[in-house]
Picture 1 (cartoon, helix red, strand yellow):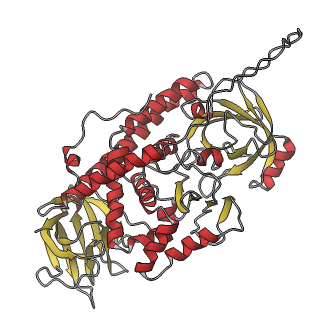
Picture 2 (picture 1 turned 180 degrees about the horizontal axis):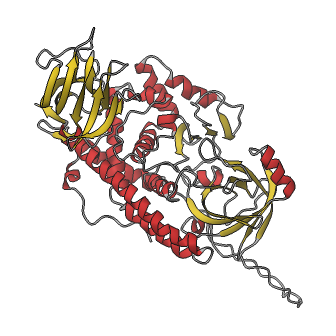
Length: 562
């Protein structure tokens, strides 16, 4: 059953700025022009032939269910067994990253011989071959060219080592593809190995021509694997294309490192689909994909489209998504490509326009929590014939995933609405729902309950105090930050350690609102500032010789001034 749109939505999104409405139209055109192209269908009638001589009927071969690769990823749940010889089990134990031969048996289908298997996973998800649930990378066509498992020649079996719901990556991929951000299709499979039950796995399509053809008309370009926590560099692994031809790769790196903005952006525009990259980053933030390219330089691929000569980034490794609901949707990424773009105010505004575009057209209309419940219910039904206990477990898994996804989507909705409010004078938002970053992990800055309030707790310890910070993406203009703070025994120190205050990063001392010392019971603090170029970083700070303070996070507000 396809995802169902929610019954109601906020009316505030119907009044987007004219430029954003234009973007919505452009995305519709983009999706219409570049929609995934299905494999050629139909057959050519055979020419007339003379009657054949009578033959003795042969025993029927095992019937292969008549499904395409699209049907595989539309909810079909195969039961498969990996048949690996003892010799090759030993080889995987010693060298898990190199392929060995195996067979893939589908229950109710055929057995594919001369397939290739190796272990997959990295920090957190990798398991050895003799562990209860190793992860696998499989190729059916590496030795026998053209051999496919239900239309797929390359796929992974992910072990859910970091996803107890077993649903995160499939739902994340569906959302990404809805936004036309490249990501693999997924389904589930019930897996055995040499007679041993391993259980439910994620069956995820590999990055090959089958994958690329759904997003690009020309699949002959260079496809790069970013590697493990590694930035784009001249030695980035080339999965497809001529690895010795690094022309466009080097151009991308050089463009990102061009020091002059007036030269950097035209150079980037020649080698990077900038708007597509902005959509990619936004999807990462919606999914709280902290372990992807933009925030950890990990779990990514990028493809050079021969049609345009421009690179596109591809999502990967999304098992740890739908996490911190307070993650800021306009959070500034930290990778070479994003850093080259975010330094410019016009580029940041262009990014935000793409964010609204994707939100309106692809994310907001779908009830993603209900979609998680649908997938879980379908799995519960289909796994019942294989494993009743595993089938029953998906009731709780679906409920947990739906709860996480619903909370995250509601938080994103609130943040998008806040962004609209701050576009006009008088707009006011609360900041308690955002993720504030502490400056220390040594106990000087912690989130804690105090006096029945959710607080950002600050204490002067060996580090001389600390702060909580929040970077916001707002338009140029005047703003006022306000909040209520209780404090006790605050003493000023040397230099800039003047006590307790609200401020913005880099701001000079505010004579109207000097740092507080002594004691205070839920005193009101405020700080006015002007945004001219860079996105502001808001700071709640205690620095001095002694003292502690509790910032009521739900009292923190930001107002756009005339």
